[in-house]
Image (cartoon, rainbow, N blue to C red; front, side, top):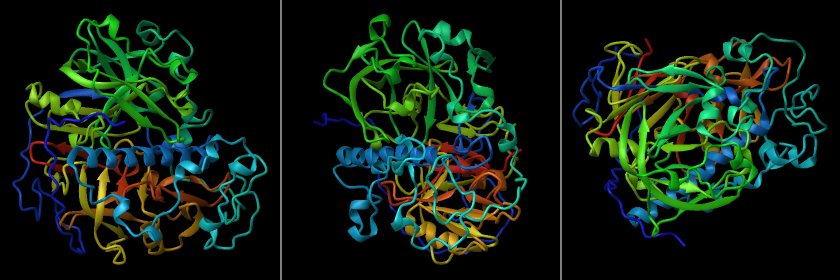
Amino acid sequence: MRPTLSLTTSALLLAAPFTNAQPTRSPRAEVPLGSPSPASPATPDDGTKIRLHRRGSAELMKDDGSLDWGRAHAHLARAQSKYTRSLNNFAANTGVAHFLDPSLLPPDLLNPSLARRNAWDAPSGSEASSLDWEADLAAAPKFEKRGDKVFGGGSRLKGAPNVQEEVVVANPSARKRATKNPKYVWNPKAHTSTSTSAAAAATSAVPTSAGNALTDYNDGMLWAGTVSIGTPPVNYIIDFDTGSSDLWIPSTNCTAAACNTHTKYDPTVSSTSKSLRSSKLSITYGDGSSTTGSVWKDTVTVAGISATAQVFGAANSLSSDWEDDPMDGMMGMAYASISQLGTSPFFQTLMTQSAVSVGQFSFFLASTNSELYLGGMNSELYTAGSTVFYPVTSQSYWLLSASANVGSTAVSTLGTFSAIIDTGTSVIVAPTASAKKFWAAVPDSGVYGSGYYTYPCDQPPILSFSFGLTDEKWEISSDSLNLGKVSSGSSRCVGAIVGADIGVNAWILGDAFLENVYATFDFDNNKVGFSDLA
């Protein structure tokens, strides 16, 4: 049964009407062009830097430069469970359905749940591991089917482009991963005890401006950072997620194998812990499993900045796909209206307690030296005068009105649509019908099946997004667009804009988009700002 929830932050649903826009390139200025609300002020460099470690579309690529289909589908399933959960949370917290809820759409526009497509759990080569879903592949082009096995077993994905010659793809990340699959990276916690000191001893410390030590994992392959909880503090490796609003970690009550490789929260060793017995954590994972957990208040610290009496959940179990994941848990950074715990998210607690001087945080996601900046913007990482702020259309997700461009032209068949800016999703996800319209406008694109599309590796298209009523185009680099070749040696690459109905009627602009901009999330003015990278 869902616990009684009480919000500390009001939910405001704006749902501004969208209009078609045909943006053209123009000089950028630090104002929200076409926005009726005041500009977000430029902020001094008085915030706090948190070194992050890369987690992005890189995790979906195999050692040979081809797409890891199993991991790609598992990632989409995890995103689906998150968005299904958050829309339910919004309805429970506000008493109304979010306008992005698919239940408001006609049933014939909805596809079966990704959670039932458990290809990633099946043995390689088995029938269950095949991505050959007939309904998805009915429109696939009739390529020759040679060398297009994607699991190394007997299963073959129909519609795969003909593989004839090796093509060198301009993707430095692919060249960097010459020996290991980065998804199954070495996890120091899996090879030592679960104590904080043992985990820290297996890694290298990176000092920050706040004077604390952050842990550098896996040669920059994870966009995650260190969070300490309790008194005395215990460190956890956390994924900072702008697509959700709750902080949760494993509990000491979890004895499953997936939990034993992670640091667990033990309230009995923290002098500042307090149980919220009337509340309960409830999580559904991407593989369809679910768990409950206890809810606590304790001191939570990131890079020396502390939120006292922060509410968070401690999960009693983890799904199997977390066993090899270096991250211990998640920290949601969206609005309280989508919180399952019905509480103020960490950064908003910092604002309430005056722990930050500016109600902004910013992300710089890159191959190395990625950073979360609490309390403003780091001027060293973006080009001065390039910032544009866009108003959010609902104080739930970081939700913007958007349009998509191919070359210099907006895709007219799409018009404008809702776009969620989500650091917790690796790829760009569009509803299946929208993805079909988008890729139909991309020259020489091909349907690969199951929501994926291809393009020539040596001639990547120029794709971008525009927001609000402005004429700006924010481009996706060829590196970010490339999820990998369809198979080893192919001349066709799989695009990072994927069609999938993951439980929310919006586009998800994940890391494949965000690694091309400096992104600022502004609670003070309810805006999202993008800047050119320095």
